[in-house]
Image 1 (tube, one colour):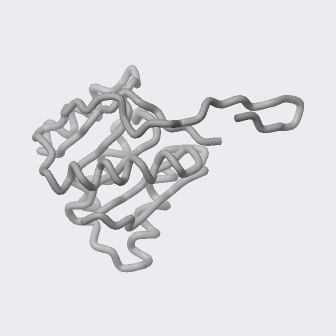
Image 2 (tube, rainbow, N blue to C red):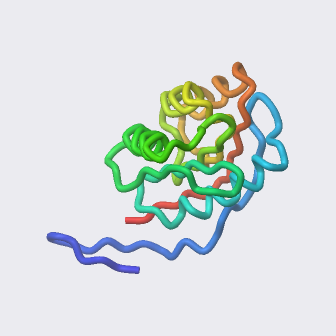
Length: 150
């Protein structure tokens, strides 16, 4: 796919997958319900404009943040959208279209009750987010597949 932009062209391959691998890295293994929700959230995420965050609970999209210049802003938008419609974030899952460059998103999400994460991994600081999940009994899955949509 190509898009014309000022003084150039953006070229991007089609995103044809959901995930390449499923590696549990957190402080616990994800439950069956969390797995179903993470698979759905990851599919939603791939269709959102990057930077994208999707929040899902019991098979329902409850919040999304996308098209932001930072992942943390996308997360804040997703949380606020969920709260605006009075969704309970406790026990929900979060999908990110790209890796977490820092553990700040995981910390903020955890403070709001989000219990499981699916993300591609690939940051040189992946261990920060993984360690936070391990220390707080949160599930985290690494997929090895980024979903950038511009």
